[in-house]
Image 1: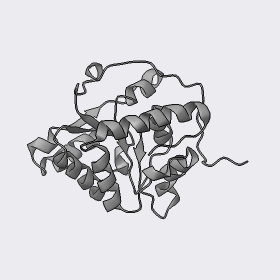
Image 2: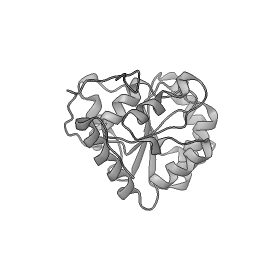
Image 3: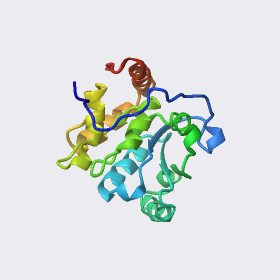
Length: 200
């Protein structure tokens, strides 16, 4: 049968072990991430991410400096939400290819860009065992992550509106987050070996 998604990855990718501290990340707390190039970050989605930081005091948002010139602009925007929020916006340099999957696995959840989705970065984050939350739009570039999730299949990580996206993200990083996120990680790890799984 034809593939469910137009993006494929090697089944031979392997994961090892690293620590958060080795990469300048907080030892405790929930790490939300987005490893896309920063031109994909639109103001509305960024405001949702800042609202999630405000809602969960020990949550962090981890982005890459892609490009580094965009970091100052996003930090300036984050500062509008107050120091308690802006101080939990984290940036790191591009992660080396040799160990990028194991480093990305340090995150707890990946928040997709609804306007211009994760493409190969979405494949990588799912392979690392990190749940990817998305909200598809009408264009191809805004529906790629949904196709990846349908292919696993994990359609329950696909939301139907930006408000649903924010609500589900808040639930996943909220009170019962360890139960939810650990279940997703186990399901994704299982899917790597079987080609599909299900999580609640």
